[in-house]
Each structure stands twice: as structure tokens, then as C-alpha cells.
Image 1 (cartoon, one colour):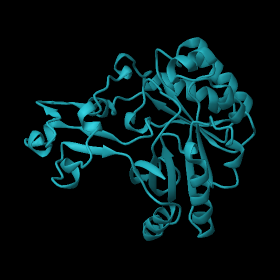
Image 2 (image 1 turned 180 degrees about the vertical axis):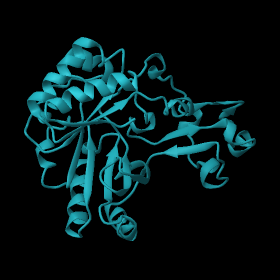
Image 3 (image 1 turned 135 degrees about the horizontal axis):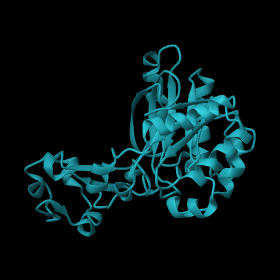
Length: 285
């Protein structure tokens, strides 16, 4: 599996204490993505010049120019001595391949730390872009009695293979209007809407951005859709800016800087409407 990070979470990526594998590569390009290093499938160098005084000395190829990284030079580097030899904290490589067997063994080693209701979660990026490896890992882990969850944008034409192979599906809904979805995520959402309306048992997550999907017209379309498909649980995530340092480390501009979250009160009011309609809903942040 191609991953860009792994680590612990509690009560956010599924029930209990969970070990999360973040799979690299995504078919969406959401303007507010909090993990920009997750989008490209290939490894990417993240550069944090403030973390080291010796970054220029750690690169023998002269890719470091003050506080900037010459990424063209960096991409042609064949040794990555900055990381492998010098372990310079200014450099962080996002992306590596881990064999399925290693993921199974690593998860087994952590089993005692899951507690009574924890487990492992595959997040992203978009995990279903690595569907065959994903299903293989989930099958083996569940056979060994480990609770397995997956977080997905629900865009895969193979979505029907997920129920029954995972204990929990956490699915995203960015917006309903196709034109808006193409503008904010860079792709069509017809497959997403079909998958979410398939009757599959899931937890549905909706990011809330004041200027995009929380405008009155789109908010009502989201409400109407949720009242029709009646997901088991709906969780709202107000826009945050925690990914900004990652964009800078990648030499990219974060489009989310020009957007805002709705207020907590506005999000809670919308959430309460769904509760009044019989849907278990909550605002997570």
C-alpha cells in the first residue's frame, strides 16, 4: 500500500482508540484539503526551513536556496541524503510503499492498545484507489478479530464491494450540485450521489464551508438529500486551516485561506434540523 502517514486517533476515525493508515493518492482536488500531500500518488518532499539551520548543508545537490527548495532539482535526486543520511528535520518525504503483510503484522502488534472498541482505520487521500490491496488487508484483519473502518469520498464504481468487507464505512458528501462539485473538487459527483443513495449503512461526513456548500441554496439541497437517504449518522466538520503549513512545505498555495467556516451556532442550528427529522447528527469541531 502507498501511504503518506500513520498514527493514532481516538473517537474520530471510528469508535475507540484507532491506528490510522493514510493512503496516498486522491481523485478529488478539494480546495480546502487539510492533507495536500495526500493528493498526488507519487512521493513528495515537504520542506520546513524553520526546523533546521543546516538544510543547505544537508543537500549536496544545492536544491536549497535560503528558505526555498528547488523542487525540480529535488525531484531528480537519486540519494535523498538529506533524509536517509543526515535526517535533517527540514525535510520530510511524504509517500512510501508498505507491503500488506507488514501492515497486518504492525496492526497485530498494536492490538492490545485498541481497548475494547478500537481498531484500525484506512483513510486518505482516497483509499479505494488502492481497492485490491485495501480489501485484502481488511479481510485478513477482520478474520483476526480486528475492527476495520474505511474513510472514503464514495466515488468508487466498486463502492458496493465495501459493505461486508468493513465494519464501518465513513463517507464524505462535499455538496449536491454537480457544477459546484466540479468547481470545488475538480470532478463530477454523479457516482458519489448514486453510492450514497444505495442504502448502504454508513456514517456520513459533510465539511462545511460558508462560501461554498453552506450558502442557503446548497445547504437546503444537502438537507433534502440527507432526509431522503437517512444515513445512520451525520457528522459535520467546519472548515479549518490546520493544513496551511503543509501547503507551504509543498511550495503550494492553499485556496482555503480565502474561505471561512460557518459559525458554530449556524452549524448547530442546521444539525438540529436533521435531529428533528430523526437523523443522528453532530458537529465535530
